[in-house]
Image: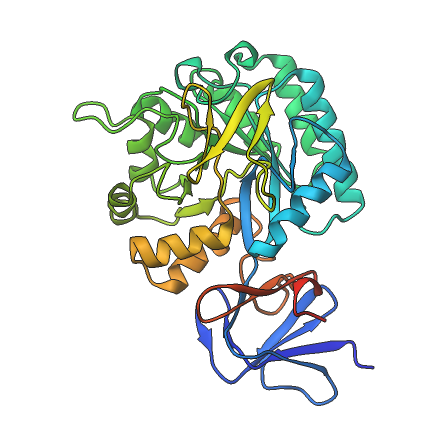
Length: 385
């Protein structure tokens, strides 16, 4: 049997352009080409629809009934990755919400093991906190928030030696530009979030190497007439990518359209789910750091009404951007795949389909329903081989 597999019968989106009457050709875990059906290849005939790059989610707190904050082991990471695959996500960062030093260290060890075991869908880790601003804490436990110390900085740099890709969310109030520069020099991606910072301070953090903003508009200083805040810096600074929770609850559709029109430069707005344990389940509540979170009317909230993550999957975010916000489908797909991959520096392997890219792709119906998902060339959901 040939070691080449050719997928045909669907329109193919490579991350930039559409291909008609072509085949996606994969060898093992890597895409060889988008071309005519080659002789001798194992053929997989799809029943119409679209074949698109697998989605990349840089903020996933949980799924499948589990939270990374509750249990830090490779099986939890495996469960979270598996829960998001049916919704088209083929690479994700399990995310730890602000917690103790001990739980953070255990999370890093679990991530290292997940990398060694090549858990399908595991890209790396996102440590969201604890170096944030209490003034913009959101659902983070204020008792656990603290400024970054020398020991914290050293622990983050050591963590990246164990985990292939590491993202950390910090507030400029808690982390100096000098520390940000050293983290970035060590290969860590630094995102700004949960911050009441000024535009000037945020721009200084960007000059130091911060390259991302966490869940744009949420838990951050807003645009004012005399102080643009972190939101203003995210939109105005061409080097800052920005994650967006596109569920119609976290950010009003009109605000999303304004941000899309206002942001230019190579760094784009991309989609994140900020998903919690509920994804892939019918559970109606769970706990975070001992606090009850209820699932009601499409949102997740603490008992005081504070939003606590999102009850959102990636294909739903794509549909929202296309149908409600009104952007073209190819741009909505890029926001879920190419742009987050570029933000993490993995755009040569993820977020696109072409020679040398990972064989991570999704078969969508014309109605944007997920029919099949492949990770590293292996079918993990739906009608696959």
